[in-house]
Amino acid sequence: MEQIDLGSALIERRGYNSCTWRRECDEGKAMTVPTPLPAGLSVVIPVYNSENSLEPLLARLADVLPTLTSRYEVILVNDGSRDRSWAVIERLVSRYPWVRGVDLMRNYGQHNALLCGIRLAKYATLVTMDDDLQHPPEEIGKLLARLDEGYDVVYGTPQQEQHGLWRNLASQMTKYVLQTAMGAEVARQISAFRAFRTALRYAFTDYNSPFVSIDVLLTWGTTRFAAVPVRHDPRTIGVSNYTFRKLVRHTFNMVTGFSTLPLQFASLLGFGLTLFGVVVMIYVVGRALIEGVVVPGFAFTATIIAIFSGAQLLTLGIFGEYLARMYTRTMNRPSSVISQMIGFSTEEGAQDGE
Image 1 (cartoon, rainbow, N blue to C red):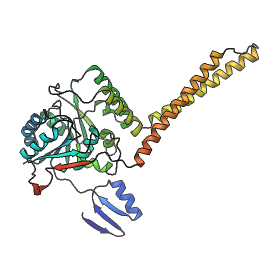
Image 2 (image 1 turned 120 degrees about the vertical axis):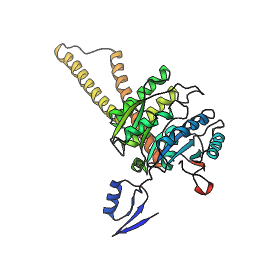
Image 3 (image 1 turned 90 degrees about the vertical axis):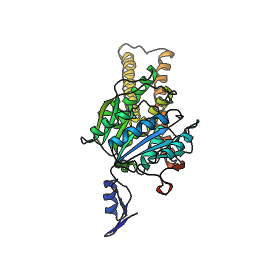
Image 4 (image 1 turned 180 degrees about the horizontal axis):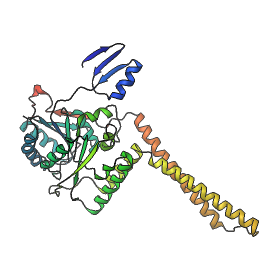
């Protein structure tokens, strides 16, 4: 690692963003500045139970990537597959010198696997895509062309969704929540088929949590987002591993892990019920003073108590979720743990695509 003596500061070329660099420089601490990445394209693909789709996918990438750039690599991150996906990856690494394989210790989730691959990418431009052949490699050129217009992140928005009703419904709900968390209009057009500048990873260099949302993390480094319509092929091999239940859980983790929306909702709920309680009190006292009638009935009292008790429990539950997130992060649980890597070391014969 290169070190530069700059007065009382020591700059280590590693990969912090400029704000961190300036703050640490003012404090006289050890500093880091990003090392420029070489021009080229890194493709990161999370793999889960895809032994039958990997070979045709890599064959298509082998035809497409040389037409886009002279330097490229494909990083296949095996996310605890239960089939023979890792054996297929090993075979592909030996067949293509520009393919790298990463085997995780267990299944951590799609975004966790993506984060692992993003941190290992070596080229200045990065593309992420699924392993099920629904993201056509032939459409990568559209993403890169839009990226060259001055954007930092470009999403490939499906011209027509190829999922079932419940999957599409859960996907739209996730995008709505993500729009709130990201604060970007393009959030309604996001997909796992995306291209961005690899240097954006410096914005979340120190992020270490089991709850990962790549799209939210990208907003930590830029506001220049765009989307372009792309073809979305129907799935012909295997079945989707993203169920309605998993999408709902991902949405819940995302909204409590990267947004204060639930806390704002709890505040508004408390304020609204307080106003409701004041109105009920005015009604009861008013009838007693004006008409001399006391509002009778156990049902009325029980209903009011139930409403306020439910609101209190809901608010406590929201607070509990945030406390749980804080507790989990203090445990320093990693987003993923690598079991083995192949194809990365030049001594082992790995080469870039040329």
